[in-house]
Structure formats: C-alpha cells, structure tokens
Length: 533
Image (cartoon, rainbow, N blue to C red):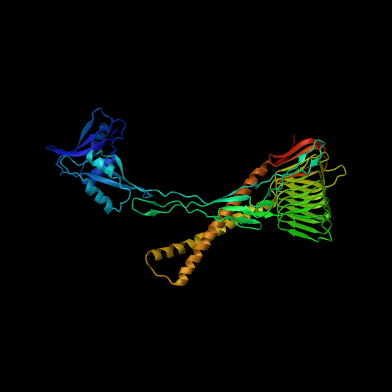
C-alpha cells in the first residue's frame, strides 16, 4: 500500500506536475495539499487544469499523470517536509514532499539536526527515519518522535475485614409474631484480630514528551489507618488490629472496638448512661432517664417515657410506652415490639408489631406486619415504604402516613449545591493569585518570606476547598439518588385501611373515603392511587 504523491519536473515546454496514483488502498492525492505546496514553492498554475489533472490521476487507469503548470522551466526544488507536533506534545509527525527532478534530497543527519533545532530531542525514532531516507514514501505521515506517557498511579484504599453493613432485620415466626431475639446486629471481634488493611497509594511515574519536558501523573490521595480505643496498628502501619474482645463498628471512616456496657435497669441507681460503645439493659429503662450510645442500644424489658439515642441500632424486646414524652433516635434501625405515645426517628428502617398515637420517621421503611400489625393515630413517615396490616381505626383516630422525599432532604440538596458553588467561587478567585506567584517564582523573582508564607497558606486552603467540593459532590449524588428512588415510594396494606386515614406520597395526598382491604397506594399521574396487591 502506498499513498498517491506528486513531483515537479521540467522540459523544453515548461514546468509540469507528475501525479503518481495511490496503490493498494493508499490515500489519494489531496488537491489542497498540492496547491499549498505549489504556492509555497512559488509555482504558478491554472486552477481548472490542476483540478482536472488531479482528478484524472486519482481516478484514471494510468499509474501516473503529467499535468502542465506553466510554460517556463522552474529551477530545481529540493526535498521538503512539514512537521506536526501533537497538542499534548507526545508525538512529532513529518510529511515529506518529493524533490523535483534534479532537486536535492535532505540527509538523515541534517533532518535530525533540524528536529533538534525545533527542540524535539526525546523519543526520536532513528530506525523509522533511516528507513524513510533509504526508501522514501512521500505524502505519507511518518512518526519521527514519540514521548513516554506518565504511568498513572492509584489512591490509597482501606480494606475492611469485617462486616460493615449488618442486617438486623427481624423475621416473622410461624404464628405471626416477630422474632426480636435472633438478630445479626453485632459484629464480634477478638483481641489481635485483623480489622482493616491499608493498600498504600501508588504515585505513578512521570512521563516525558518529545520536547523532553516532564509530565506529572495525576495526583493521588494518601490514607492512614487511624488508631482508636481498643485498636492497635502494626509496625509497618498497614494493618489495624483489635486491641480487645468486643464489638467492632465503622463510624465515619473510623473503626471502633467497644466493650458492651451491661446494666440491669436504668433508674435512680444508675442515673443517665452515656457510653462510647454499645449498651445492653437486661431490665427496663424508666421515665425521665437517658441512654446514649455510639454503638447499639439493646433493652430486654420496657422503655417508658425515656430518651434513647444510638449511633447504631435500637432494639427493645418488650416495647416502648412513651407516655407522650419518650423518644427514640437511631443512626441505623429501630426494632421494638410496640411503639406507643412516643417520638421515633431512624436513619434506616423501623420494625414493630404496633404503632399507637406516635410520630415515627424512618429514612427507608416502616414495617408493621405481624399478626396484629396496626398503625393507629399519629403520623408515620418513611422514605420508601410503609408496610402494615391494619391502618387507621374504626374510632376515627387521626392517622397520617407519608412516604417519599421528606422536606429536610430537599433542603439538604439546596444547601449542598450552594456550598459547592461558594467553594468553587473561592477556588476560582484564588487561582489567578497562585498563577501569578508561580510565574514570578519561575522567572526568578525573589519573594519576601511573608509572601512565600501567604502563597503556601493559600495553596493549602485551595487544596482543602477542592477536597470539600469532592466530598460535597459525593453527598449530593447520594441524596439525588435517594430522591430518584423515592418516586417508587408506596404504602402497602395487607389487611384493612379505615375511613379518614390520610396517605401522602411525595407532594400529593389523599384521604381514604371508604374502608379498603388488601391494597397498595402509589403515586400515578400526579395523584395518590389505590391498586390491588
């Protein structure tokens, strides 16, 4: 395969262009390339004659075509070329043009010297250049220099060697009651157990372009294992070990090993309890007392008008009788035999056998599907699903059920967007200052110590802002995904829903006008609709 090419020659009639046809699928002669060459060499020509001749050369049967240009002999023209440098300066390509008959050729040494004058000194392809001068192929791109791209690295990764997403959702017994006892909600560990491994960052390797300029690989992030209570770090800083027997959890990127604090009752004897790990109450939590734990809270008895706050799950085996003042707040899930006259908020789901006259909020779902399984009075709100057997009451107690995006999530999204915009504005405002200072330093301008300190501080601040933007974007993506998922929010009633119950899905609602059974409520066409299960 060879591209078509052209060559000047003269005789007693004048100056001509010898156009050689491409072979075996090579590229045809480009009329634009021909005209640019003739203009550069100062060779006059007749436009229609030239166009017609190139067309015949490309499409005719003859291997070459002679095209008259003008009626005088042109002095011999030496071999020429065009040099192209890629935008990233990683490749230098040359396109040679044949000397006229009687014209001189460039020597390989002269050509390489000219590359050097153009500052192309790295990655020279000597063999390809020598091969061209031994057997030239004109009007053909020839790669004469190629740089070495940077080897990109990888950011550090922490691999956790324990279950970080425990599922403690209770199962239904055959008799319809909920099994609150066999729950996979604690991740036990023993002293010396490996909990996490650090895979250090790979910073990659710099590349070099054809101008012999270094190209940095993309910046990567480093990480370190963080020691907390009851954990140890290996000598090579790559492994995190449990320092004691206990319960291991991952909270905001930190691994905690906590011994479980066990107490019989929470009352006058114990006072309020606040513990770094998990708390187990084998008896009851009495009115006006508080239990706070960064791990889980487990109560084997009853919780009265008390306040429980957990970073993990709250599990109450005999239920919550809030007396109008009790509260439950869990970072993850809440599981209670019943919930009565209480305020409840869960970052995951709520599972119970009954909800009476309470305000219950769950980020994910609320499940009340035991043998009794009723929600009567109050307000329950869930991000995706409320699943209940009996909803409302024959006595007409005000019962409101809400599913879909809660208003606080919309506000969080707006706040995050504003935060990202403000951070990017600050980054953009600082960049011209940093660029100016960098130019001064590169040109050898000496700066005062306070100026250097200012630039260093501004650089660190901009880097911190960029990291905050990345974190905020990740949070925004997660919230927007939650909003998208909320479009499928629904209320499922496997028994009966009573007149007067209000059902809201997102920004629309309906009031049940007649008793219904075995139904599902979804948002269709901008309204709440009832469909069969």
